[in-house]
Length: 615
Picture 1: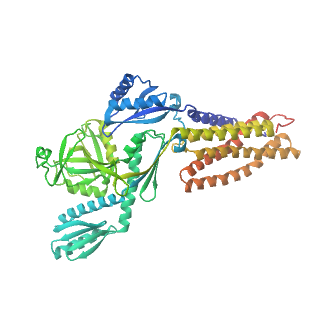
Picture 2 (picture 1 turned 90 degrees about the vertical axis):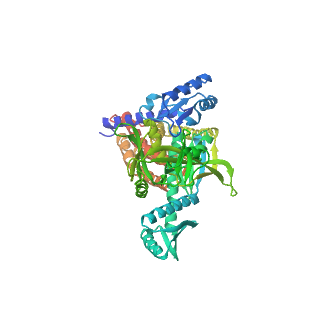
Picture 3 (picture 1 turned 90 degrees about the horizontal axis):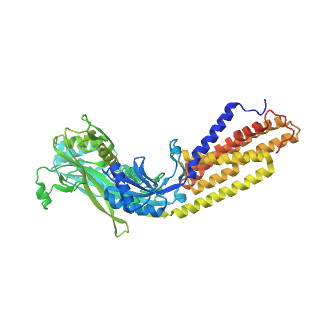
């Protein structure tokens, strides 16, 4: 029978409608001003921290909508931003430097919606407000560290081969000069070094000296690795800020673009992102007196560090291994169910660790965490100056000769092991990062952009609704219902997709889709009118109108979809935001205009004797 849908199609449509409204609903509830508490390094956020926060708020008579653990973080929600700011000050005073107390905006989604993973759309920087950083990686420092490692490897390798040298020194950037004891040793050293040269360096002989120069390919590899490694670490640090949809991406050959929508505490963001960290493993110096070192008599080959709890640790200057060789670090338990951290190194790091520990079994090894923090001053070139902060985060006894995999034991709690594993994974920066550009988009400007975008959407929607209702009558009302469902589906899908972020150009894409979505209905309705004017029966006219218009609608939308995919592929930032909403809108508009309207038309007119259509 013409114009009759089977039951399963109606059930499918009902499911889609419920789905769309369910996942679009969280956007109606807005966001709460909130403070987010997370542990710094080995600090743990637990029930005792929760009690401290509640006591601090109560003491300062600050009313919170809720104070609870959410997604592993402590989140306190408030009714307004004034209370939020006062709460941050009060909680920071109580918790001290061991915890990060960051301002944020938390979705006010009800629990029953969160239970089905429904949440609001992620808003971009231009809509939600936030901070924009452009960060530059110090590539010279990356090369310097690579050269230092190269010199250390040379000393170890030449000693193992029995090749005596009188000096190894850096003569220029990318160049290391090795001076051997005699000509015969120089010949052997040249042959030995030539085996490992490959594409890493070139050799230049000058008497008993050999100059090793890093190749352009190796220098490029060092730069690329430093940039990609720092991007990974920045992403890990952003997690500490609790940003819903941050943007961290490469820009050029040495810069990183970071956008943090919704972040209000720009000082805290700069502190976390601007600090540069790395790791070093040293043998603890057990041959010299620690007391003498504390009194200022530090041995020439040693250095005095402090642990996180303030205890002094005397370690050898020689670096056994740097953190850039760590591939992975996972927390776990040993055979006695005590917390530990399992470390996995790359092949080069495994060889270095094996050589460094084979003769040092039973000796303590210190893991040193190094940060480069901004001083507030600038050098002669106008770049921010950094200060070096070094702390011992762990002292462990070497139980056996270590290779690519080993473990750190002597950890007090599983949470501390988990935090240490995160620290080891996130600490392997090859070079300091400096913030060279900073912009802040205020929440009021973001709110104004949202208001302007919503006004354009509402005005366009109303204009189309009036036109369709007047020009196509009952069929126009059906098209308007489909238009509303189309907008709901776009919002629902955008809210559901993890990586989708709505920007101001994205709103433009939705507005454009609203206009395009009725275009399909206009084609269908005009084909039905043509069929009626040609004397075709009403049921047949409806059937032919939908069937004959389908190919035209499909062609038009496919070409637009191709354009959207190209924009997404080659564009960046705002262009991608526009492309995403446009692509989603094309798919939803085809569904609502073809399947949705026909289901309603079939329900009203299908299988009935109709004298006249209201079209």
